[in-house]
Amino acid sequence: MPPLDFAIRPGEIWSLAGRNGAGKSTLLKTLLGLLPRVRGRLDRRDGLTVSYVPQRGDYDLTVPSRVIDFVRGGVDRGWSFLVPGHIARRHPIVREVMQEAGVLALARQSFSELSEGQKQRVLIARAMVSRPDLIVLDEPTSAVDPMSERRVFELLDRLRQRYDLAILMASHQMHFVPEFASHVIFVDRDDGVAVAGTVRAVMRHRAFVEHYGVVLSDALGVDAAPPAEAGS
Amino acid sequence: MTSPVALIDADLTLRSFFDAWEFYRMPALTGAAAGGLLGVLGVYVVLRRLVFLSAAVSQAAGLGVALAFLLQVQLGLSASVASPTLGAAIFTIAVTFLVASDRGGGTLRRDSLLGFAYLVGAAGMLAVAKHIRQELHDISSLLFGSAVAVLPDDFHVVVWMTAVLLVVHLLGWRGFGAVSFDKAGAKVRGMPVRLLEIVLFVTLALAISVATRVIGALPTFAFSVLPAMAAVRVSPNVQVSLVVAGLVGAATGFAGYLAAYMWRLPVGTSQTLIASGVVVVVEVAWWITRLARRGSTRATA
Image 1 (cartoon, rainbow over the protein chains, first blue to last red):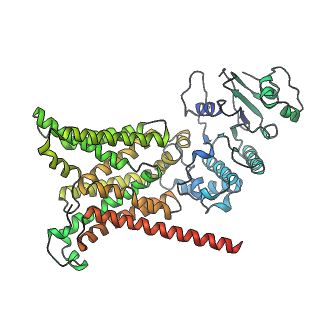
Image 2 (image 1 turned 120 degrees about the vertical axis):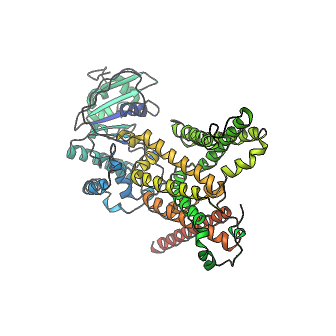
Image 3 (image 1 turned 60 degrees about the vertical axis):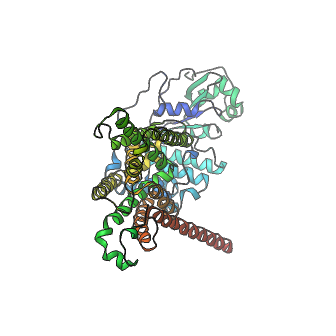
C-alpha cells in the first residue's frame, strides 16, 4: 500500500473506505497497535485514550452477558480492573452513555438476543463508557438494515458533538459518508491506492470515482476530476 | 480407585459418615475444594473452548514424571535431582505456555496445539515406560492419586492452592474476562493482556496438575468442565457463572464423596456422575423453560 499521511483531530469523523479485502482492517489494527507497523510513524497525543469496536462477529455470543454487563465490560482501562468498586463508581457514566445510545431500556436483556442494529448501539455504548478521545470502529454497520445503519451514524454524530469525540470507522458502505463524515481515507491494496483528506477532496480523486462511480460524486455535487488536494 | 467404604466397615448411612467425620474429613473437603476451584476456572475453560486442556496437561505431566524416573534409572541421578514433581511441573508449564503464547489461528489452532500436547505426552510416556517398568506404579499413583484417602500434606496443598488461586481470580476476574472475551478491545484500552493471559493459564495449569495428582484425572476433567457447563446455562453473565460454577463444583465434590461412601462407588466416578447429573438436570430445565416461554409468546401473539 502506498504511504499515507493524515492527522485525526477532536470532533472529526473519518471514514476508511475501500472494497472488501482492500486492507481497511489491517490499516485500522496497525493504527491501534494490534498489528506491528511495517514502517512509518504514528504520533499519539499524550494521554490520548482510544476505544475499539471490532466487527460484530468478533464477539462470541455464547458468552452469557446482559446488555448492562456488556457495556460495563468496556469500563476498565490499564490496571483499573484490580480496583474494587471501579465499575460501581462509573455507573452514572454507564447510564448516561446507554441512555444516549438508546439502549438503557434493554439493560436486562441478553446481548445475544438483540437485533443487529441494537447490538451495534450497545457496542458503541461499551466503547464510550471509558470516555475515550477517539473511537475506532471496524465495519460498524456491515450487518444492519439501512434504517438501523442511519441510526448508528446519527448516534456517532451525536456523540461526536457532545463529547468532542474523534471517530475513525472502516466501512465499505458509502451512502452516509457525505452526510456524516468530515474526512475519508480510501485504500485499495490490490490497485496500490491510498488517499486521505476531506470528503470532497477524496471523492474527487480519480481512483475513488473509478471504484464507486459518479453516484457519490453527484451526491456531493462534484465532478470526477483529476486527483486534487487529497494527500497520498 | 476403591470406595471409601472399603477403608472402614460400618453402616453406610449419613449418620455413620458424619460419626466418622474425622476420618473422612480430609478427602471429602479435598473433593469440595478442588471441585470449587476447578468449577470457577472451568468457566474460562468452557467459554474459551479449552475443554481438552485438562487432558493435555495431565498427559504432559505424565511424560515429565516418566522422564524424571528414566533419568534416575538410566543415569543413576537421585530423586532430588531428577525429581518427578519437577518433571511434571516443567512439562505442565511448557504446555501452558505453548497454548497461551500462540498468537494467531484462534480456536482451531489452540485445539490443534492441545491435541499435539496430548499426543506427544501420551506417546512419549508409552515410549519411556518401556524402560522403567518397575516405576510405572509409582508414576500412576503420582499422577492419578486417589481421592479415597488423601494424605494430610496433599490436603493442605489443595486447600492453600484453592485459597490463593481464588484470591487471584477474585482480584483479577475483570481482567481475565476482558482478555478472554474481548482481547483486542482490552489491548487497545491499555490492559496488560499478555500478563493476564499468562496468569490465567498458569493458574489453570497449576490447579489441573495438582488436582490430577491428588484426586485423579477423571474427577479433575469432570470438575473443570461440568460445573461450568451447568453454570453458563443458568447464569445471566460471566460473574454469576463463576460463582455458580464454584458452588456446583464444591457441592458435587463433596456430594460425590458422600455418594461413593453410601453406595460403594469409586470416588472419582461418583463425583463425575453427580456433576454429570447436575448438567443433565440443568439442561432439561433449560429446555423446558425455553419451550414454555416460546409457547407463552405464541399464545400472546
